[in-house]
Image (cartoon, helix red, strand yellow):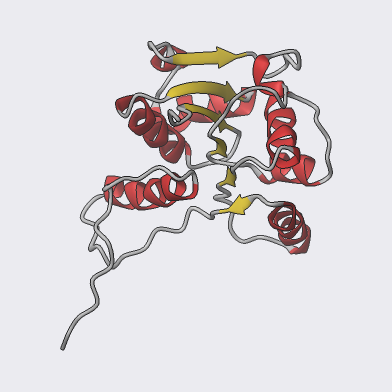
Length: 191
C-alpha cells in the first residue's frame, strides 16, 4: 500500500515561526502534499519574525485553507491524512483544542485528528508555562496528541540558529513517522 503523503500543517500566533517554515520546506522537498492552515496572528508573526508573507506558501503541492472555513476537506474525519502538526502552537490554540472547542479550522482539524486517532503533534514555544498551560497539554497528551516543546538539544554541536531549528523539526518529523537525516543520531562516547 502506498504511503499517505498528505500532511496538515498549521502555523499559529506564537513566536517560533522558523520551525513551521522549516517543516514546510522539508515536507515540500520530500514530495508531501501540504494542507496549510495559518491563523491571522500566525500570519502577522511570520511577517514580524521572518519577513515572510503568505505568498511564500503559494507553491505546487500546497493547498491553503481559510482558517474560518469549517467546511474545508481537512475538517472531516474522512480526509486521508498521515498526520497534523501545529508549529508553533500558541497556548490559546492548545487551550481551545484541549477543551474541545472547534472555533476555527485549525482547532477543528486538530479535534478531528484526536477523534480519528491520527498523529497530532503540537509544538509550544511559550516559556515559562503556568498550571493551566500544563493541564491543557496533559489533557491533550492523554487524548493521544504528542506535545513536543521547541527545546533543541545541543549534543550535535549546533553552529547556527538553523541547526537548532533543524533539531526540533527532526523530532517533529519523527513523531509524524517521517524518516529524516536533519540531525545526526546521538553517538555516546566510548571513553
